[in-house]
Length: 91
Image (cartoon, rainbow, N blue to C red):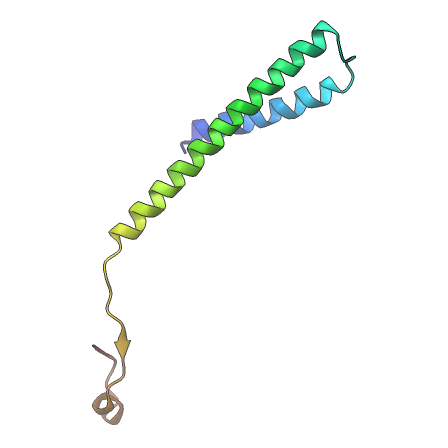
């Protein structure tokens, strides 16, 4: 995710916490409580969308990373290299 999206995501999380905290002081059926409930629901959906985007981007990045890695053949000691003290050789 870009820095701006990360910052927006953190702002939405802070907003959600403030809304939930403020909702505790409101009576159940008041207009203000209903509006706050709607804002909480919308903010939660936005946070879920951010998390989905973040997860999907990290999965794509990790898939691209594994595809770009060159294949490296394993190294092993040969009997002759042990006798001569020479370094590892490729199989």
